[in-house]
Image: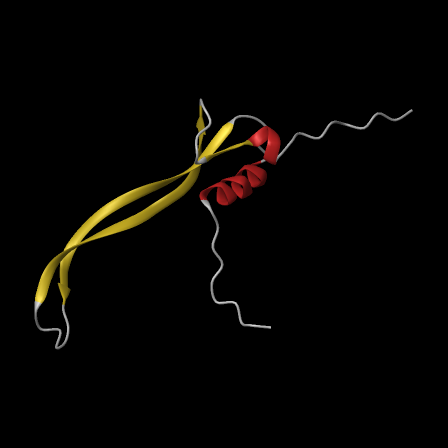
Length: 90
């Protein structure tokens, strides 16, 4: 079997995993990223003695956010993580 080096997920797959992990059973949920911006001087090739200004985008947080309406980024928690009904004993 080939050695797996990379596994990718869609936005909806990640959202579904987080909805299940948090025990959410209702509402439309989508993934969000809190981004930061930083700047600096970066050495360039080939000798590294020349620097140029550069910007870096940082991923500070990843989370899920409740939406009022479904869209292409959301999952319906009631479908992907339905609430279990307690069994009735006789």
